[in-house]
Length: 449
Ligand code: UD1
Ligand code: CA
Image (cartoon, rainbow, N blue to C red; front, side):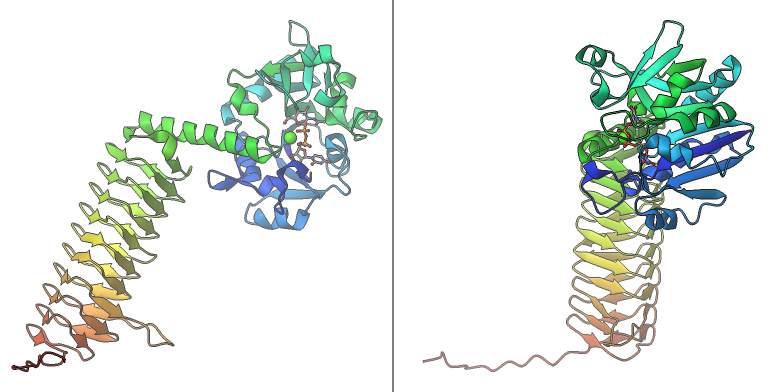
């Protein structure tokens, strides 16, 4: 039997933020979401989040997670005090308790699995995760013998100069035999620099206590301030990019690009510098993205090229070319082979195969058939000040430069709209529509005197 408790009640004073620390974002998910997902595959019987500072906000952010229990710690008197709050809810629980710090988000699921395995096979009262850090400043130091048996943990601020030389660092991740921990929890004292109840002090009271050292010290990075948040983001980004490179994606300048964990990238995708892929963006095989592109929940088919453009919540078919400087907004769907050029904005519109919108246009709430050629500067006037209306353009139609199509309006197929027209009435298939004043020429026009 396994219960997991995540400590997430602290104020996070050092972040200097109105947001609770565990709700700070890291690569598109909050710290606490990352911590919770790192233990998901262990399928614990109980999952408990200890909340306190801005508890309602933290609970609300996780409301959609089924089976998560919330335990309130009020006031927040240290990590030991936090775990004391479990004495009631876990009364009679006979299994192991895995304690995770809500601000240690880079743990790999395999590491937790190993920790639990080692804890169970050794029969220790507690097994904690450690790493040897080059700079362990701020972390608790673990005092252990060569066999991995731990005698005590001393917080950085309570260490002597000599003790600080020990770089075996406490990750804040522990497997406890719950029954044994429950016996010692009431005996913690506030005899330390911060005057708090430290969970780390329970280790000296529990024997045998063992530790497991992780090979990759990045895994135990804790986040107390903005600098550490940015360092963890960099580690996470590096992991994501390594993963996608191994899957056949090229990054011309990986350091200048960011990805979200839920992005999916095909083979032979090339990501040029300064690209940011967010949400559940999907990029098909052979796409060339960037430079300078922002994709959010975008879905791109195969062999699409996107240059200096923004695509959000839009679907782009195979072989389309987007940009430079185009914006595809939510609800846009492009079929195969569309060309969307510079300074074009498309919103909530369907474009059939081979449509070209190459220059300076706004297409909103429109349905375009196949091979429509939208002339430079064509605008769908979709809003009458109160409501949005649709524009429909049949296959093979062409609009001349600087046309305005006042919606609701339907143009049949193979329609031609003369340049500079304002079209307010439906146009039947095959017709030429002109909606502009006739050109006037006055000869013998005198020079102004
Ligand atoms: C803690 C450990 C330290 C370890 C480090 C790893 C203690 C005393 N020290 O230090 O040995 O090296 O983590 O990152 O445990 N929290 C509560 N209630 C509280 C106080 C904190 O829930 O009353 C939560 C915080 O929200 C946070 C976690 O516990 O998620 C750790 O607290 P924090 O104050 O950041 O501890 P550290 O000083 O980093
Ligand atoms: Ca911390």
